[in-house]
Image (cartoon, rainbow, N blue to C red; front, side):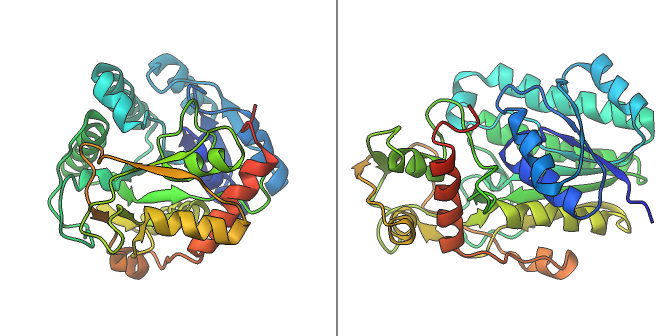
Length: 339
């Protein structure tokens, strides 16, 4: 039986490109729209090479309704996986209007185009950010939500829009995937995380120090109530995350209304633990210095993953060692990223 064609917004990005690969490997035809504002088309060329399959790509901005409508007219889309969005917390505080326009308005345009085309299934790339400053870990899907910055609020607004849509029209099938901290890369070293400018996330920062692009790593805060005083996060291998999207897509075929799942490993690792794991797996010393806490950071954040394990029949397969090894393999093969 032919599998439905999947439209992936932001498919050239870090999580998007790995998910496109997982979709192609699972036999789904894929069409990608991405304005390449924070990604490179080279990632999709490499996805095609790894999968030995072709995908359709349109350099389209989701905020452009006419261009997006054309994509829906050209292809019989079965479901949408929605990654497209700005994602830097610090930048969102400096440029809130740009974040709300791109993330929230862009999603509205996408949903209008879906409605017009009769497409009612969407998997949305949300974030553990929506749990706000909650101190009670692990986070469960029914925990209260809040946000401490415009990026987090944009994710929360989109969640509410999608949930409201399901209430108004029960024919919609909406899945909200709240992910924790994606790290690592494809083991081939062909695709990986290629942030523009100074990385906001820990792992690419560590990799850029290891490859000599940056002098040292800054560790924000060593006075948290955690085993070694540094922040604890739930790091998940990007391939485990990508496979979670494929499982969510399969589950959506028989799903009614909305479903929310955490995607994480269910356990936390501290910043210093991650650095030590990286050094041990790759035989490289990572120089770092300690600075003050960042505003809005919490001591610990990790997922309760029971719901995804039970309902999606999904659980992570890869270890912290796999994550740091694959991340470094990508960086050393691509010292300047996709450039």
